[in-house]
Image 1: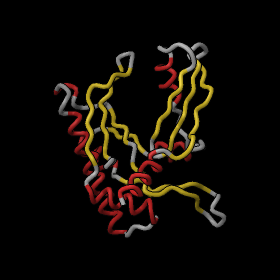
Image 2: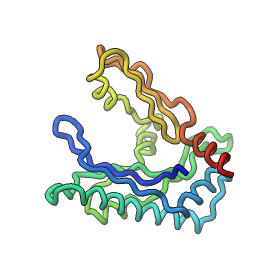
Image 3: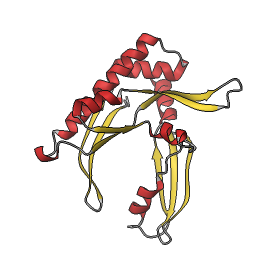
Image 4: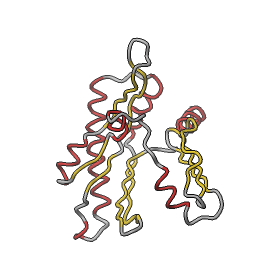
Length: 197
């Protein structure tokens, strides 16, 4: 059975981005059950949401500790932490359901910041929207750096909850396509759940 979890990367930039250490903590069964319940029915009790928010906050800290323990002591205080929260709900709001898009993210960034006394950058999509953007973060710059080492047209496919495709021409350092393309692991999750009963 495929199970999600918290992935943590320790990355440094010495001219090129380099992954120093990595950790992965699978979601406990109760977390999986509540996330599936939310996906399937869209209904979750306030007490369940509160517990889920608390549990994911502690998992963020645990995953960060696990990844920091793998690096030399002198490097165990990162300059900042980038936190990509899980989203419990995302959809339209307003009388005509078209005025704005909102979401309910899970996990307390302040708890992470206080634990490690480190700046935490999070809610990137929301901050992009507040600043007047469309809520879509550009991913192509990092892909352009990777594609520069390739010959011909480079294609990147990121299969997350939603799939995103980026097509880059390294010869001109131009991004031809950078767009969401449809459901990703949501379909895989449904297939696995349906096939296992």
